Image 1: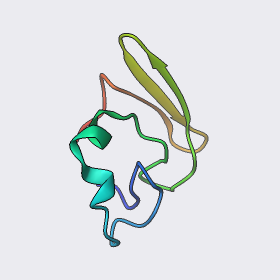
Image 2: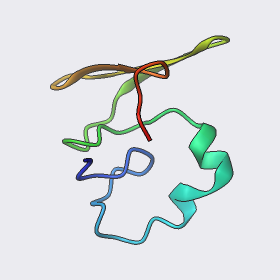
Image 3: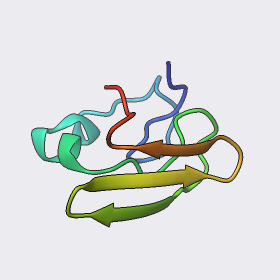
Image 4: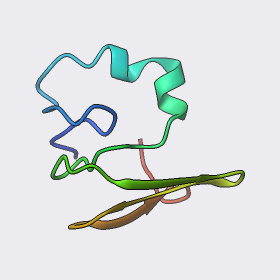
Length: 65
C-alpha cells in the first residue's frame, strides 16, 4: 500500500478528493507512492512508464489501483 498520494505527493492521511476524480484516475502517477519523490514519467500511445530513482519502474501494464 502507498504511504503517499501518487498524484500530489502528500501523505495518504490527508484529504485527496481532488486526486481521486475520474479524470485523475486516467493520469499516470507523478510521485512515488512509497517515498513521495517526483518520478520521471513518459506517456506513449500505448500507455505510460514512471521511474523512481529509489524504487524503480512502474508501467501502466503493471500498475495496480
